[in-house]
Amino acid sequence: MQKTEKAENRVSRKRGNRLGFRVFELFLRIFGLHRTYGLLYLVCLYYLFFDREATASAGAYVERRFPESPYFTRYLHIYRLFVSQGKQLVDRLATVISKQDLFDLKLNGYDELMAVLRNSDKGAVLLTSHFGNWQIALKALNKLGRKVYLLMRREDNPAVHDSLNVGHEGGNIRIISPDQEFGGVIEIMNVLRMGAVVSIMGDRRYGSKASRIRFLGDYACFPFSAFAIAAAVECPVVILLAAKVSDYKYAVDVSGIIYPRYRSGKKKNEQLAPWVQQYAEILEKFTDNYPYQFFLFHDIWKDEF
Image (cartoon, rainbow, N blue to C red; front, side, top):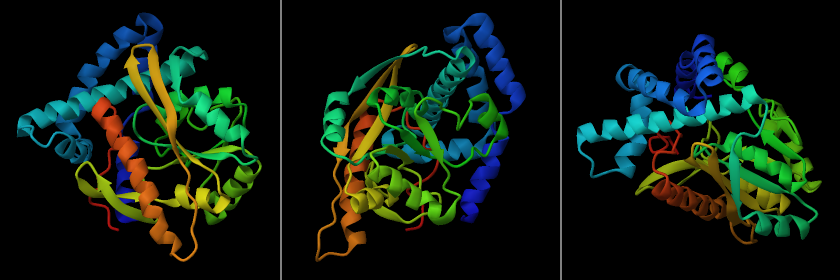
């Protein structure tokens, strides 16, 4: 892992603690969801003024998404980002506390995805992103009638891991650890060939190989491992996005489907970039519709290629 990744992990462990989650849990139980959101406006002010790392990492996106904004207006955009992410973390906490499906999930592209799965004996790579609330969206995957595997590393912050029940999704969902030999790729390919769905985070490289492609008017690094796996297995890549549209409603989209297939006569690594670019264009359209649901607080534009 690169030094920058280690530093960000240390920062991540500082954000959020058990006392903070207990306070939000108490507010949820007493005041309900909407009023608990109100507490976020004070908490996020603290992060805006005193967490320089968080503000700087969010600023990398804001500068490109709102390039014409004056200097001080950019801080308003960052603040709105923090509040938006806080609401979706509260939603996740509310779901854990209630042990019920509190939110209405409107699923777009479900019929098309089911048609793809029915017409193949293989599964699909489900590409998740730090855009919207992908954890909430996973609940909709039980409708697929397939086993779902998450490629997931352990959450660096113990308080976040325990309070949000990270890694314990339940139902048909299982976990594949990237810390095993070959990063779990062998297990991933095996379960894909058996018809399962494997969820992989597609917008953060964590030191892995990447393609340099255009995103929000500039070149950024996106990992290509999900597309390399799908091309090797010859299964589709399905882009999963979940936007919060009201207090109790999410719009879940699985209509973005890419079919990576290697062609002879050209180097495999050279064939990956166009597929990654398609993915980035879908994400860019998401930010057009939901500019404050970009939670990839990492400067992907400064990553070394």
